[in-house]
Length: 174
Image (cartoon, one colour):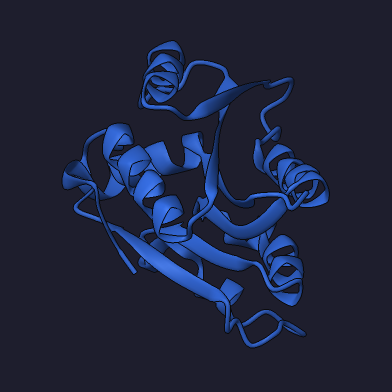
């Protein structure tokens, strides 16, 4: 029996919270982002598997419990990471989830919401080589352009940038 195509969305909540706050002085519009993800998966005729990663520490830009409950309410699964030291981050967990889904499902699309793109360069490269469409979501001016042309990278024919523009309206522009 053929496995359904899967769209995996990985959201670096601390990173996106900080960038939306810095650029627009507000919280991310999670309901609008969830709607955009559903429309994307419908257009791809695929099932959506959205995951948001949060650090378990006091976030000065948002209350983690409120954010976690809101994300769940709009249909996004959450993973609360216990931060042991200041250098701990959710990026490794996000990469692990990519490999887990890649190994167990028919992964056709990978969407990453983050600005730490250097931490995902290898994952994006492997996804692209495997023929998986990749969408990087954020504010391109803050993503770090060096990611877009890493040494030895493929030509990024399957990688798009979706700009999180006017986040208060949830407008995602590819």
